[in-house]
Image 1 (cartoon, rainbow, N blue to C red):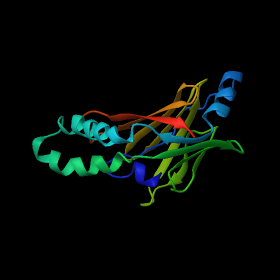
Image 2 (spheres, rainbow, N blue to C red):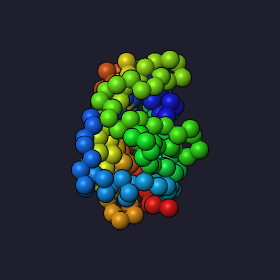
Image 3 (cartoon, helix red, strand yellow):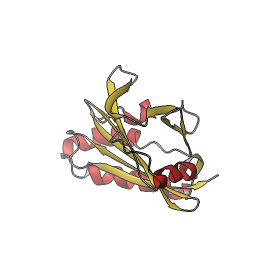
Length: 177
């Protein structure tokens, strides 16, 4: 997770807590597990397009410097592992360390990145999605895992920073393993 929120003044934090309604609790069962990337062949093109859309809005002299930093933020996860344990939401990208956030998080600092910068987060769950908003002095990252079919998941990321002219946003599709 640390690699996903560093650089270009973009960092992450987690968003609002919602109580577990019966529908939200049902989505826990549906979202929990391993999710594998679909259409991997077109994934890099999707991310490159998202980076280029933001870079085109930047000053001409900054574009060349910004593109590699923005590309670093668009890490591709071949597999997501999602779940809940002991009032914590847990997520893991590929073989990276498992990350977790309290489901009661409401903008509280819950970790530091590799450079010692505090990251706060908010957790929000709806009937078909989990939204984590991660924030630091560098900016805000919103990760959304939304179930769009019986075994389909849409993962959407939105990076916002005062250093970006527009948010960097992309979505990737996953199937349950």
